[in-house]
Image (cartoon, rainbow, N blue to C red; front, side, top):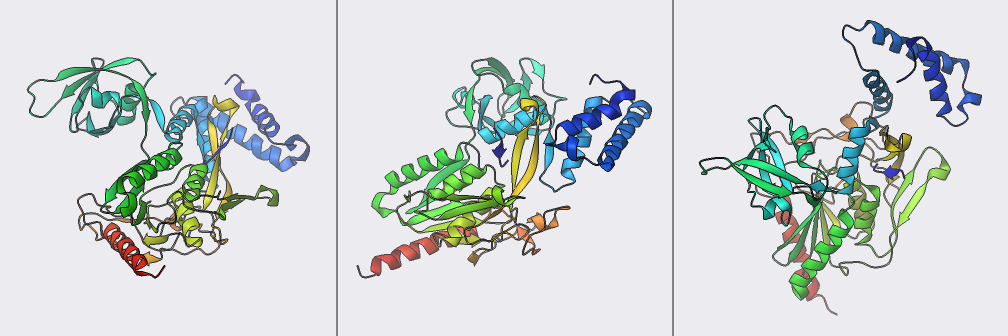
Length: 430
């Protein structure tokens, strides 16, 4: 199923083989391809043979083919690309939001894996792994020399299998070993807390766990705050997007009816519209959506839908402006990887395309910048080869700090605004 997001020939026969295989892969290509198409495919075969025979060092045929395919796709736009079998599996883990592993967020420090934080209720947390621990060995094999991705790959594995970590901990004289059994780890894409009488929900990405995570967060906060609940803050800042169906699910949670988003492809028959089902999960309470220059794709679908229906006030700075839809198309049943192909543009309920433009907030509030860091980021309009937007507009975007050691001005403003709305509502005549 496609997901929206989204070596035996001889060198002499390779040109004809590539031409034939490529044409068979295209609908009706054998009948409709022109002589020019065959000539260009023969040209590719000739170049492939020359590189294969004469490049200064031997190169694997598979590497050349992978690079050629990726070059073709990446030349279309910044978001189309080829995923080899490994990258495709990694992408599936990311979008699925769960995998067999230990349950630790990690980084690399001085060639060792450093634990940023253990995830609650996971094997690592139960085994006593702590923030700041340095992992020096995996099953008695040193980590030095491995990349972070290689180390993470070794820590992941089938559920129920054991692994032994050698840990170096501050204020502990000698490294010690911890044996952990892998279990299913779910990536938390939704985090929540109370801010006084306001329910705060942060969505960090849109994976397969996001819709259910939002439902749990809303239910928990409603029970905790009860009748004191003044409203909701949905924080989409620095959220790069993810799965289209999860963006629709999150939007639907706050809408009673109406269109959420439409996607329009190359042909008229490719147009699809997605509508909200009856039922507002938060019972009409006021909502403020926080966005910034790091809010892209699925985040912009949610912000645009709630803004167009006047269901929420969008606050912050202009979003990234990625208004295109990518479809993940497995090749060879996924054994040979997949292609990520831009297949449509999406439009907000009012018919706005935000491609290379972004969502303009109803209230623009900028975070105070850290003088030691540059929080300006590129927008979609700055990416080479991007799809041209209908109302393209370049601007400096800000994806600054969101409360990690810096004053969160945007959140503070949102909380004050929500409490003001709630107070004013209480004073209105019934």
